[in-house]
Length: 322
Ligand code: CP
Image (cartoon, rainbow, N blue to C red; front, side, top):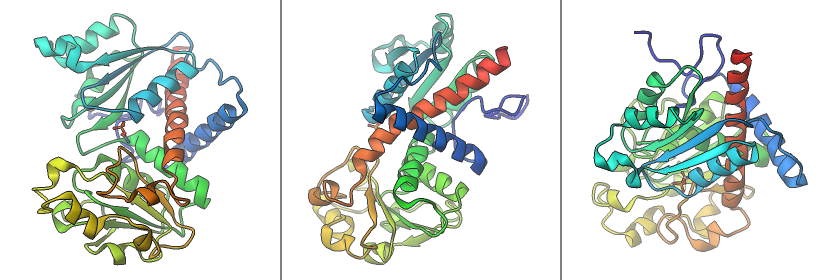
């Protein structure tokens, strides 16, 4: 069996499961396309029928607000039909295998599967088994991948900072379990970011050798010094015990981003958070809603990035079919 590739035999991207191994030119092309869709959105224009006649199935077996809603909006705005399959209310709970579920939806002529799942490797497994005309996109897989989140984070940084080369980006919180941190780091590395810092308790740092090139900081203050971008991560209540962080108050005391701590970063630093936020745990409300916060811009960018990804994959499929 051939080793798995996200690319089709003609070299075009067919699936998007991870940003790892993608060329900077492809990321820049996707970001430029997302910018185009943003301009169209702002002008109230017609996005174009790039997905007309195609069907997108959202298959989420973990909770989501932003990713699922934005994939749905992205697909609808480009003219696709959309199915939202709530996996916990599907025949999966009656014992149907994931592949039988996929084959069932494929028989209804689904062209894209957007999959969020806690199990590592599921999106690749599905991609290895779908019909040749079908694409699979990760909507967030275990602690491994969230590629469209990485792209929307990169787009947000590009909009506010104009580039990546001279930047210091501090990613703060539960890095070890965060697919957001991993995909952001992948995007930032591919795009040639000056310095990426991982900041958080030792227990929530990734394994040695993981995230190569990034520096590690256990103290928040030193991790924030002169940062251009501060990317806060959700602290997952289920990880508190494992992190030996006994409660939310103590976590906030040590790692919560307050207005005072944010002054360690550059005055024009932006504050990011992928959502959902735990206000008063990893971030103070006045910072989340403050003048340096770009958290809502990230959400808007998420729709545009997902439009760009779906349009890119659809164009590939149409060219191959022609
Ligand atoms: N950032 C993110 O993935 O949010 P949701 O879990 O709401 O999709």
